[in-house]
Amino acid sequence: MPSDTENQALLGQLRIDRTERETRFDPRRRRWIAAGGLVLLGLIGAGAWFGLSGGAALPVRTVMAQPIAGGAANASVLDATGYVTARRQATVSAQITGTLIEVLIEEGDHVQVGQVLGRLEDTAQRAALAQAQAQLKAAGALLVQYQAQLAQSERDVKRTEDLVERKLVSQQAVEQARTQVETGAAQLQGQRKQIELAQATVRSAQVQLGYCTVRAPFTGVVIAKAAQVGEIVSPLSAGGGFTRTGIGTIVDMDSLEIEVDVNEAYINRVQPGQPVESVLNAYPDWRIPSHVIAIIPTADRSKATVKVRIGLDLKDGRIVPDMGVRVSFLEEHKPAAQTEERPRGVLVPAAAIRKEGGQDVVFVLKERTAQRRTVTLGGTSGDSRQVLAGVSPGEAVIVEAPAGLKDDAAVRAARP
Image (cartoon, rainbow, N blue to C red):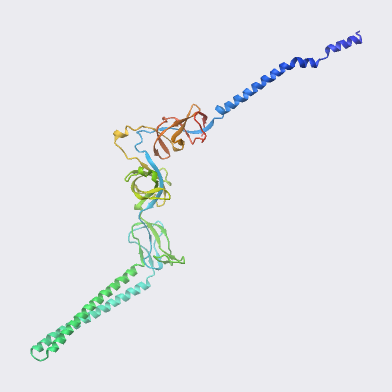
């Protein structure tokens, strides 16, 4: 059996010396920790580079550049907005002040020139006309009386002259008879003038009576009814708010045209007779052939614009006054020999083009990167622009690119 001393020796051999272990393994452990830290930093750096270069690629919307067949013979050189206006429009009113007793129009009615639109109360005008006609009749009757008196005076002169020849009356009697004839002739002439005056009075009364009937000045469509039966209508603006200045508004639909304000910096692109393509805001898919009527020779100082009148080559009931319209001034057609030399180009959305340093540029998606292209622009076709150089047909053009997008930046096509 072992002694206590031997037992203590055996226990000493089994005891772990922690100081010796820490001294033996500390350098190696430190190296492993340092190596692990370096690996972790490398992974973090690689992840950051991956996130900046490819993993966090900006999502962008792209549209394929469309080729233009046959060049840009019908391309737009300038776009503008305006309104449909009526060259011939009138607010119809009576020429005298009176009370409406009849209104014969409603909005949307088609009226012909001379058609009765309304009537005013005409009792006073009819009375004045009857009085003038009575005066005319009285003047006519007095004229007959004067004619009879003159005829009698002429007969008296003949009898007096016969008596003078037979020495039965004096020469003075003949002179008095002749004076009666001259006086009767003067009265007759004066009465004829009175009849003319009475006739003029009758015509004036008829005109005043005619003013009580409101008629259409031209053929058109009623777009507004402004008065009702019982209201007072006056051609002059009166106070109080109870007097109407008209009974309705008529528009000649055949006189509709378009008025647009063109920036004075681009007015040199517009010429009289130039073809125009008009699109109503209400019918965006309907393209109306039009042409430039005239350029108004004055500029609006406050807006720096020049007004242009555009005629519609197509008349349609859907076109009504004050409609908003967008117009494209087109290039005039040139001979085939010239048009064949034009570059074909492509069409890209106008939102894909931006200005940088005075140049027109677009960004194209190429191998998951955005490539900056300097382009040469042509005309406008609706919401698209013609690119003559810089983009090839079929390339993916970035639309509404982010403001901070740079050349060769990582991007990816966003899902629709």
